[in-house]
Image (cartoon, rainbow, N blue to C red; front, side, top):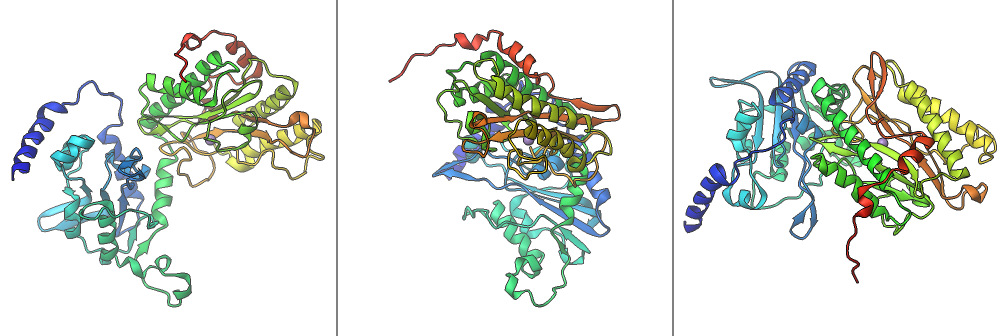
Amino acid sequence: MKNNIIFSVLFCLIANLGFSQTDLPTDYLSSDFHKDRRESLRKSMPENSVAIIFANPVRNRANDVDYIYHQDPNFQYLTGYKEPNSVLLIFSEDQVNGDNNFNELIYVQKRDASKEMWYGRRLGVDGVSQKLGFSDVYNGEDFKNIPVDFSKFDKVMFKNFRNDVRDSKRNDADLYSLIEQFKTKVSYESIPSAIPADEKIVEVETNIDVKTLTTLMASLREIKTKDELVLLKKACEISAVGQIEMMKAMTPAMSEAEIQGIHEFVYKKYGVEYEGYPSIVGAGNNGCVLHYIDNSKMSAGKEMVLMDLGAEYHGYTADVTRTIPANGKFNTEQRAIYDLVYAAQEAGIAKTVIGSHMRKDIDKAGRDIINQGLFDLGIIESVDQKHLYFPHGTSHHIGLDVHDLSNRGLLQENMIITVEPGIYIPEGSDCDEKWWGIAVRIEDCILVTKDGPVNFSGMAPRKASEIEEVMKEQSILNAFSLPVLD
Ligand SMILES: [Mn+2]
């Protein structure tokens, strides 16, 4: 009882004084944007269907510390709600419940004075209805009484579960409970993919569909709206500025971690919330590990440093890579490989136009150049030789995910993709050892427009000679000296 009084007082403080939110960014996507996206999804849904989208789970880092929460991108796209433990339902047609008609429902985290004191403000039912523009909002604990009979729909569409969500016990409105309650309501145990392979003898009649929703969401998300492009452009430009500042600041004594820190410092100066993926900074041979995130080498020395980082601005992430010589000047071998990758990227960017195919056109254009070049340099024995020096594809969409959802058809206006050829020659490769430890990737974010490709990250130099010019500039960061510690 005493606790309740304390919490009530706290709640008033939190609601009225302590968390009055002022001086926030003013360029978040509006509730109208999210509402419009829900309308578009609804229009694309099959007749008599319902789509169910769950929030992302909270992930534990260790003991009582969780990883920073990141919303499920589909959920984010359709709602703008950033909290966990919630579920959204979108119906293809109006549903009737007594005298209430609805075509969408959202169940959200309940307000809780003590939790909010520790972890920050929750929007709650009122906040979600006022700020996010939903008219039918409920607390998660009401989900078990949802006024919906799922058996009457032709299709109940959701993304299949991975069964990796923790049960926090004691809470019947956490994500685990919402999912378990949902599974019971839709007779989830009867769908073929939920049954162990050796028991799949009888074809089961079910209205559950765990495939279509992803396709529908991809059709929406792969074409960016005007509002999304504003945020993506900003994310790309900030990432490019990070690259430029790092080119100026680079010295052979710098560690991979310090280089990472300079990029991320620039991001924060611009109000970026996160990195869109763990930052990759690999000097020399480390650059050959495609997703190298240890960033633990103590000094870059005479190597080239591959820097693949992306600012995530209001949910939208860039993906930009530059590879630069730590001492400011490419040596002969570094320059030969660099120029080859540059030529491949130029060819790929030129093909980033309406009607192109990411693999058959963009990737092929660059790969042909790289194969010919590796042959000319004597690194491979024929242009058709199978090799692992360019082991990844050239392009992917970017957006709320760094590898954004897409149906991978032909390019259309307002799609935005990366063009990122690379050459990686690990130590011990079957070629002259003068090439060993050279790794180059150049990556930009290219918008497809009626007037051809637009490079959102083009502010950061890509040409070898231009990189060397920028690296001659001084950086204020070189004067930043800290005490030596034992
Ligand atoms: Mn990429």
